[in-house]
Length: 242
Image (tube, rainbow, N blue to C red):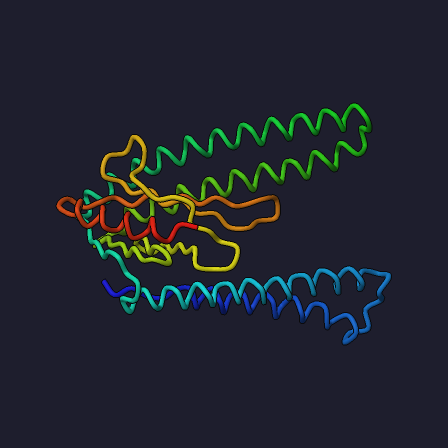
């Protein structure tokens, strides 16, 4: 299967979103919208969306360059293909783990939201209405994220006619999903065999986020007969840590 660099599509989408934000800000003076009748807010929000779109686009440009190098074979440590039945079994296990993890996270977030809502309700009933609405949106977004992740796994299982994986020094292309730690603020933290999972490599890296560091864990199944190559991959990636 020819690997396509889909990161460039994300670059253009991000640029489009950014351009829409700048146009929204520019529409205030162009159409003589009153600053005090919503025009000021449009400018602020439009500029925020515009600059955010540009920053995200630049990040995806970096991702696209890393993936392009991997597609050309630069820095690639392993290129594995899988039997579809083997891949579906792996994804079924991943789905169970994701569901369990997301369920626990949702319970924690829901509990915190409940405590916040009760505290505000005791202090101010009217304010509690707005706070409750905001918390409900937060929970809905968490649920939507969990649903999307599970849906992606199911989609991979149903469409994976010839599953394959690229493992490189800068990232991993996992049958359509791309992960990289080769950008500013990202750091490869650890590599090894996944605990409690026979024949599954686990790669863990972090990147800067608004409230600390965002954690990303990648699981890669080792095809039968590739155990020695997997050990070589782990040794090579261990030298990239830090």
